[in-house]
Image 1 (cartoon, rainbow, N blue to C red):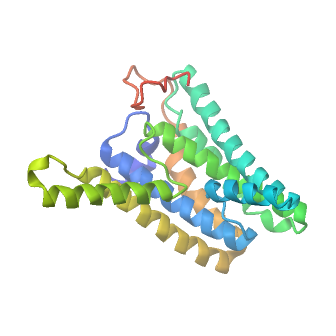
Image 2 (tube, rainbow, N blue to C red):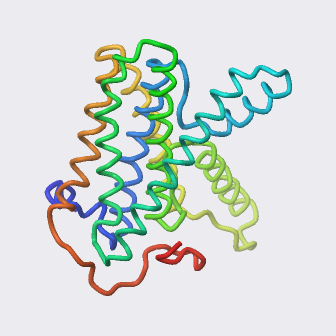
Image 3 (cartoon, one colour):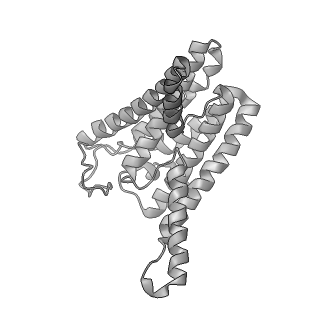
Length: 257
């Protein structure tokens, strides 16, 4: 696929090739890594690690530290709200048989990142909490979008699952090598996309950290530009989606889900 095809919105089309799935996963993982790292330097909080916030909530409830408990709960609620909002947009577009079901939430995320670039105006504690909630909301939207788009095969905003799956595939490789008659083989395609995603998340993190050091909150503007570049052309073309097989593999995830 050429760059021109990507710009025209193929990456967020309801029907995509495996290569396009891979490219989109890497792009979104890099954006997530950059937003996560830049958000840490901007706000002192990672915004994609809901496991950490859940553990932090439990720990601080146990010691009755209500303020930290509130911050953790706010981050969790914002992430969940973002995921829910993404699902609403996707299903709204689906019920209208629109080709924009994935382009729309990605474009909205780009717009929200533009808004986040003005987070520096919030100097109070309440303002910083609002900025934190905004970035968690964006992360929730992105993770839900790629989850729905890929049929729950790809997630981009946290690396724990990706690293675990890499370990599983490496273990299958070692076992299959030691026991060639066992029939156990690694899924090389899956391993490839996982390694690319982790690499993208890491590279994005470096870019986000350097970008915040150079630009402050404005580091989110280039990230917004990436999301808008892959989504807006798709919104400006096409309308009703042609009859197709759903791209979501799990049987329980219907268009109304």
